[in-house]
Image 1: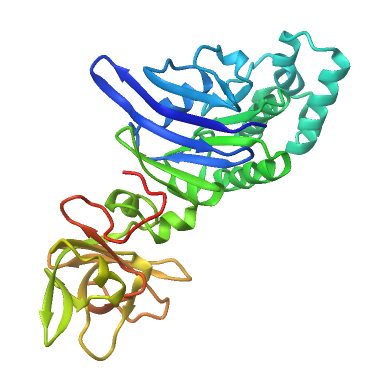
Image 2 (image 1 turned 180 degrees about the horizontal axis):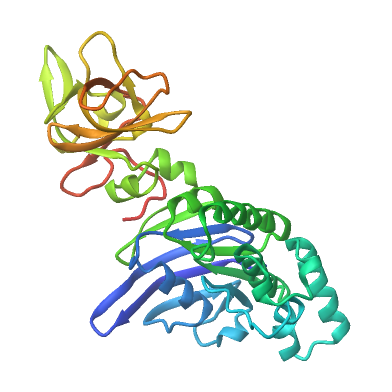
Length: 365
């Protein structure tokens, strides 16, 4: 096992920069997920670590060794792709062992490694089958087995679950999590799915337009996003945003915007500098109120009952909004629902920069 360190990594195609000055340290045995929308540079970053993409500038270290000039086979990494890339004419055993055979490893050692990997992945009874006889999840486990037998210092996963249906993705997420707990190999995992990122990662790297926006543990990013991009990307359904300003009434500071009015939480007061702010509220941090002045009123367009909760989709004075309500809610489509905002859970961002007004340890922007 080994750590991975990226120092001022850039990737340019002509004048177009797709990865911009990425600095990142992945500790030995960590499970780090690179997440962001399509085109954010996460896969390019992974491919530069693997040696499949040339670095325009900067240095990549695996362990204490700079690997910029090393070929992919000499970096001691194993990669699992979105495509299973299995040989259809070979059995599961032959697919898993193929890389070891190319290295001319002794047959006894190959057999031992393949059977150990098959036991870890629950493939023992399928070793004599061809890929066409397997399900999508089983094929992906074969691709993972091919990586495991190499016993690399670093695993690299490039959106390995994208081709699976929703149920299989859940199952394979659990398989990958258990695999990491068992092998404890440094793992870098790329996905555009923030649910995958939240459930798998020890640390998440959020990227946008080739720039690292924030690095941290999943709950840290959820509770203390560095900027509006991270706040809107992490969490499902996404955070709601409202343009607000700080007003004062009877000696009390309030946050006011189009359709929004509630007291400014005290925890923000020491950090107020800008007047023009963005209020961020997650759907689960609204509460229905039956008396007193609400912070806002949601006009409901759609109700989505999900059993344990109800998603109310609508608008506040033309601003789209989603709220999670209790399953016992009496809300109806077309009605105005008075809602209060949890002051302990809301977020404030500088409207000009998009940055959280609260100081954040370890945030990058």
